[in-house]
Image (cartoon, rainbow, N blue to C red; front, side, top):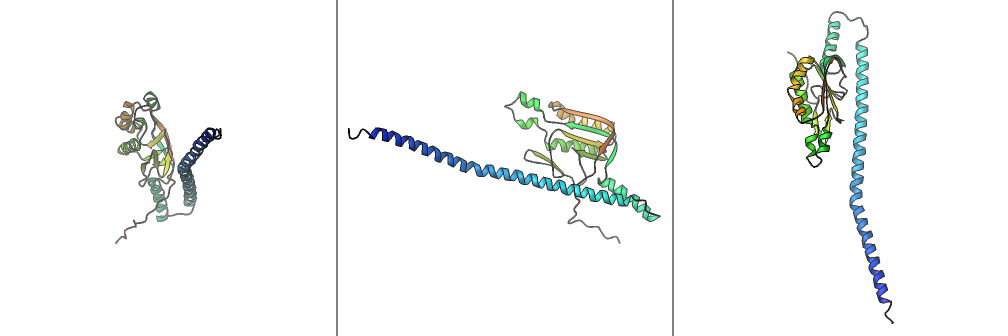
Length: 239
């Protein structure tokens, strides 16, 4: 009778032991996951802050360029060589992509094949999304077709523009773009349409990607907003 307390105490100890082991395991899981989750949250905040800073800098550059253009377009008494240089400067700004332009052209819209992914949820999802190579191929075909100006989701392409993939994100001029992708181009509507329809668009259509192409009498393409930096290149001195 003196040992009747032994069984209940043993059961209580086992229960408390299991309870404390569960708490320790739970705390260990939290210790392992929380820092990673916090790190990811911090990285997202940093990326958003940097994108906001880039956007602010681009708006500042655009304002300075617009102010400079306004000064250059003032009705000053330019004569002779000065007037000729003024007109040449305007043409060079258009060629460099620093001026909004409008003209006949086409607008292409491509998007991920969401219906295909829904119908084949176990399949490789990469088969149903637009990759940066698809956009690169379209841009290359437009250039071959003589496009005079090209923009992707409002991002003007110039000679230093880059289209690249970072993870599952497509960057154009350091700006993140998401589908649907709208590619605008100024040039001969018939000629541009013929080239892309027989090229990348045909490939996308054959894989059931949603694709549309419109020939338009007026396509408006904005100016390039980013900076132009030349660290190593310098003008060659003329003899």
